[in-house]
Image (cartoon, rainbow, N blue to C red; front, side):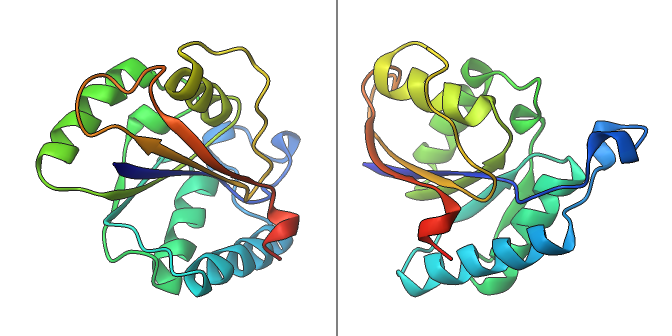
Length: 164
């Protein structure tokens, strides 16, 4: 089974401070806490074949921190992970990536997408009941064959306070 880790970006600047939401960076506290979470994940032995991130500044900065800590040497941006992203479009990408031998994948993105995507993968539909805190982590095991929708296994839901 593929291990998929969904990570929400760290604490970012307030919306009012930026003319475009996509430009909001991590705050100093956001960078610090994200580094601590990344270090804990590294210390727990997590490694990713690829970190796939939203191109929005706060998500990309979070992904850069994960890479710098050593969680993966591979990082790519994907519009699938923007707030407007669609899981069903992303699933085609995932199938191709799995066929190339990928086993451990990290997605860095936004709420409510990450919680909803997890619900779709595990229960087959989004109910809006899973919340991923900033710098929080969800782990989902994806079946090797067939559609993962409603067939995946939630094995990890951790708010950042348990990793600091």
